[in-house]
Structures are given as C-alpha cells and as structure tokens.
Length: 414
Length: 157
Image (cartoon, rainbow over all chains, first blue to last red; front, side):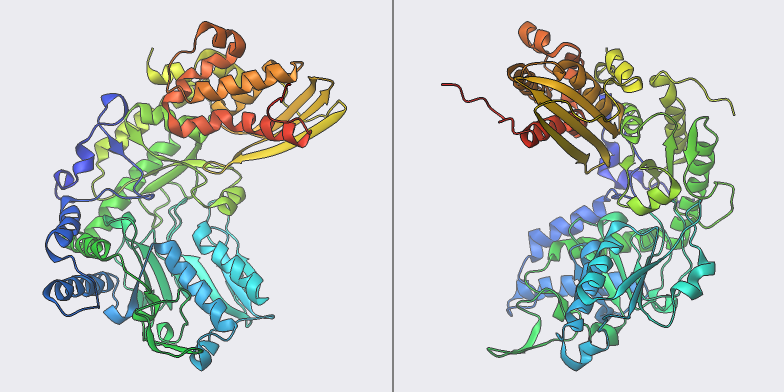
C-alpha cells in the first residue's frame, strides 16, 4: 500500500465536469505531476537557467550540472549509466532516432562503425502485431527505405504474443527485433529477449533494469511517469550508441567538421543537436527521484492490485467486453483495462463518464492493428497510477455500469 | 436539462439507432461525387455518395461507423439534403457549421426552421472534442459536392 500522496498532485484537487470530483483514469496516456516535479522545473528557470555545455560562467555551469545530473538519475532509474542515456523529445522520437540512424547507416552515413547496423534486401525487421504505431511505422519506413522485409509476431484473441512462432519469425535473416515491453491496450507485459524495446508502458509502472534485460535499445517518455512533457529518453548499449549515426544533424554533436566531412562525438552528445530541453530534463530527474522514494516494487504492487480490481469489475458488467486477459487470470498485467460497451461507441462511453467527472481514454490508442486483431475498431481505456485509489476505481465501475441504460439499451442477459 | 442530456437529445439517439440513407447505392444524376472521411482521433468513418440532377441533390447514400453523434448527424444530413436545391444545401451546410461554432447558444427561429432536426446538435457545441464527430458527414458532403463539380459557393451576377 502506498502512503497517501494525493496532496502532492495539485491537478487531483481540481474539479471534473459539472463540479464533480475529478477521477483521473488516463495515466497510461499521460500522468499527473507532483509538486516536487513542478518545483524542480520552475526552480531551474528561477535560479539556474543558463546555456548547457556552452560557456564558462556560473549559471552555465549550474545548468550543465543540473542537466547532466538529471541524465545520471534517469539512467540509474532504469539500471543504466549516464553515457547510455540520450534525451529525446519523447519516446516516439527516441524510437525514430534508432530507426532513422539505422537507415542512415544503411546508406553509408557513419562510416565503418555505422556499417554494422546496415540493413538491406534479404534482411528482416521483426515487430509484433500489438505495437503502438510509434514502434511500427518507423520500421515500416525503414523497410521501405532499405529494401528489408517487415515481419511480425502475431497475437492471440486475448492479445498475447504467439511465442510459438518466435523461432520461425525471428530467423537467420532477422536483423532487428522491435517490440513493446507492455501493451498500452491489453496491459500484457511481454517476456524480453530482443533488441529495440518500447518501454513507455513499463518504465513508469514496474522496476526496470535494462542492462539485466539485455536489450540493445529502449525508449521511454517523461510525461507518463510524473515528469514533464517534451522529454523522453533513449537507452542504448554504449558500444552501439557510439556506432549508430545520428539522424538529426547540427551543433554540439560534432568532433570535427570540414566543408565536406563530419565526425561525431560519442553518445549521448552525437544525438543531441541544438538547444536541449533542460528544464524538462531537470523535471524528469525529480520525477524518477519521486518514484524511487516510493519504491518501484511498491508502485508495481499497488497498480497490479488496482488493475485486477479494474479488470474484474469491468468484466462483471453486463454488455461490457474486456480486452486482453481476465482480471482473475493471475497474469502479470499493467494497472489498466481497455473494453468495449456493446452498442455504445467509445466516444459516447467516455462522454457519459466525463459527465461524472471521470477521465478515460477513448479511441484506438494508436494501436489499430491490435484492435483489428481483437475484432473491434476502438475501445475505452481506464488506467491507474500511483495516486489512484480503490474508491476511484469503484466509482468508475459504478458509472460504467450505467452507460448502456443512458443510451436506452436494455440489460443483456447472459 | 444537464449539458450531457442537451447533447444527447432523443432525436439524436433515435437517428443513431435507425439511421436514414445508410447503405451505399450507385448515385443517380448527371454529375456524381463520392467522399470518404475519417476522424483521425477515433477512426470513425463515413463514405458518402451524391448525385446531382439539374440544381437538385437527386441521390444521397452513405455508410459509416462511429459514435452516436457522427452517425446521427449523417442520418439527419441525409433527410435535410436529399431532394434539396443546391442553394438550400449550401444554406443548411453553413447554418450547421455556425451551430457547431455557437458554443451551445440556441439558434434563432429562422435558423431553427432551416436546420429542423439538426438543431438538436446545439449541445455538441459545448464540447469542442465532439464537434468533429458532428461535422464528419458534413465534411464528406462538402467534398462529395466538389467531386461532383458543384462549386462550393454560387457566384451569381
């Protein structure tokens, strides 16, 4: 059980629609921020704002220390060293950085070091059917750009990966395997054995040790884990990061530049062209400090219990279909539930819940292929986080139970 | 009446349940047009076909999937526009767009006459995220008319 931390989150004290108490169940989309993060970001601007990595005056020095200190903190939070963590605008940008870098390497950018990444005709890139669009489209484009073939691991009716097909799909020609650590729709946490990992839905919610997982690259975002918007991170094994050519080119990334040739600094600097999101990095550092103080084991236990309550409650309501495994499956799932209400479109479901002060996500959650596979065009999703209470989950379930009646639909008899 | 009840008026729920004009048929008329529109935030879609004969909308059919607001809106559009003159069609299009931008403000009597059942969408104007739902079919109509070579504004004189 987590200590009462709700008073740390100013947004949780505001009202929802119609003056109802706000019940925020959309943390898988973006989390609310504690005062500690807001203050860290504001204090940076108040007291230490200066250009990072340029200049020798006091403020430039403090700003550089804050920026690099945050890098070390966020890296340590996921079991990595500071030289293994690149700031990116968000997780999407981090995944694109890898895919575009490999595309560049395939076209000869990055010299001999980059050549180890080159892919082309006959090579295969493997993804899964349950990817977020952010970890699908960059690989589609890389395949098109290089002539490589895109393959994917299918999922079953509950959205679980068909690991029986793994040996077949990830064969001798597979050069890149890109997959999500956990689904933002079904909440399933996938077993790990691969290269490029989208950790957006696990870094905020479960203890993560990327070095132990043995992945080559991993991406996650600040705003889903109590941090600011506009900042994410790419983890990479140091020798790979130092060989991967950048895909955004500019100042502060180069060793030497002539009129015809450029050589790059080691990672992370080679990927961080131009002015960086310094205050956001400082806020991100404060966010992982906050989570670290809670303890990620406690966070995971809290969310797992809420997730089970959510899923069991949702599947107990007549005329509502839970996507993914049952709440009583005993599987290792995130604290979320995506579902469809028979005869009511998710937008209409979300509107009725919003009227009761309850914020949920509606739509395809940027996972159209997965929804297609599960046989629905879209869904409604309720997701919990550190500040979510059992009472909020119960209030949500009570409102959800009334949705079909609002639209004049009869109770379904099973 | 609460804001949400004002949005989901009975006439909207009725049209959502039994939509008019649903089911694509070959368009009838001297010039024809078709448009496919998707609401990118939710994936809702409408495909709409029109046929123009003289200065009238001689046929209008559609298919689609989406929320009650988007589907009811196309159904009511069908009732308002099928058989109407192009001038009346443009007038009702403009009035509906204005209704969506009115932030829930009730329209005047003349506009209400023009819009008929579509006046029921007045409550949608209070929910910026839902305006796109209500406009999905109207965007398809606008585009289908362009495909049918009907100029968006009549240039008299």
